[in-house]
Image (cartoon, rainbow, N blue to C red; front, side, top):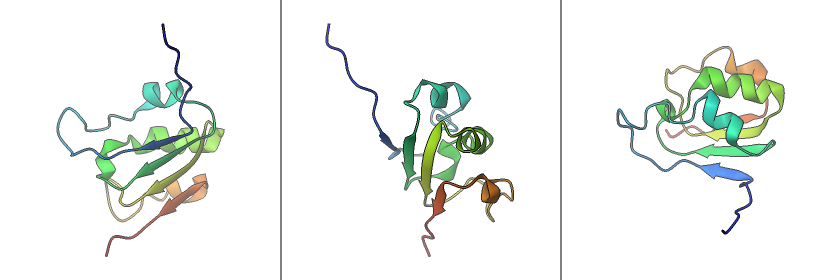
Length: 90
């Protein structure tokens, strides 16, 4: 059986549907390699923001680049978490 290495980056390019809403949650974040970088140019609701904040603060997620967040303006809790970049989509 072939064994795959855990990725060091996760790029989310999904449409937002009921099946993909918060598809990246606590459980899935814990399965990822420590230090993973998450890039989401898609919909903010693909990621459970409270789970992302917790994993950024713990250092399990090494960084996140987000084009948008689920509830704009930005959740005040995300700001002090550090390790993220919010890229405006004008």
